[in-house]
Length: 325
Figure 1 (cartoon, rainbow, N blue to C red):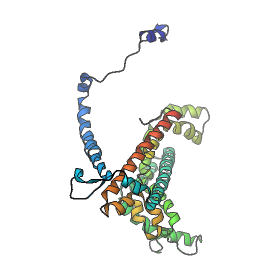
Figure 2 (figure 1 turned 90 degrees about the horizontal axis):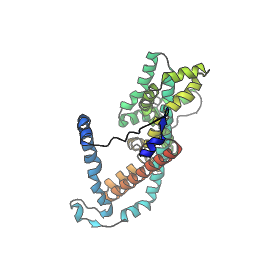
Figure 3 (figure 1 turned 45 degrees about the vertical axis):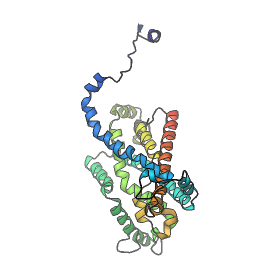
């Protein structure tokens, strides 16, 4: 270490490298307020995220309610084997991945575009008005939101505004019952998710844009850059790290597609495209008291989520300096 310090010089003088600050009782005592503030959150995570993990034992058992967890019959990997060889599970896995991917792409791109456009609005009142209107749907529960979506897509001329507009514009000759067309269901889910969450998702990007040094915009303007060039070469690079971190976190939830949206909008006519893993667990696990199968599906989701998170983080670290962990 001493030889390394002698090799590093600044203005001809040796530069001393300060060692990293070790975690000591003195440091902990100096930050005791932060430590105490973190205790409730740490307790919440341990209580609701880690303590229930012991229940994963049910996935390796033929669980029967009324008996203790260690009094059940052990079946090894039977539940996983049954799960992966089920034709229904293959279909719901396809639906889950497809809807999650659509939500991932639209959920990343649309908030970024909205944040960039809002940043270009110079009129403060107009900017705040648009931002407020855009994130108001976030505060609606999905039960209410799906009711609104179903009414908007209805064939009833009194409430189905989409069909009314299509007929008035002579795009279609008669109303279309959108929720009865299986291949349109994924698109409906994607658009509905964007409508509800795009405004809320843009808040983080607007905060990241606000932290960009204004001198960079001034320098770009002096160099002759227009609004689009400044957006492309200053704003987007300035929020790159935020985009990457949020993308990695979203990839980690690739199998955690929204339960309420496909559950409330789905029906028998589109069930082949609307059923997700969560709905599968509800129908074939919890409703039929097959808790072992439901637990096996939950473990599968958790393992895939962790693997995707680590892979995305590794790739991000190789391609750039930004990573989550």
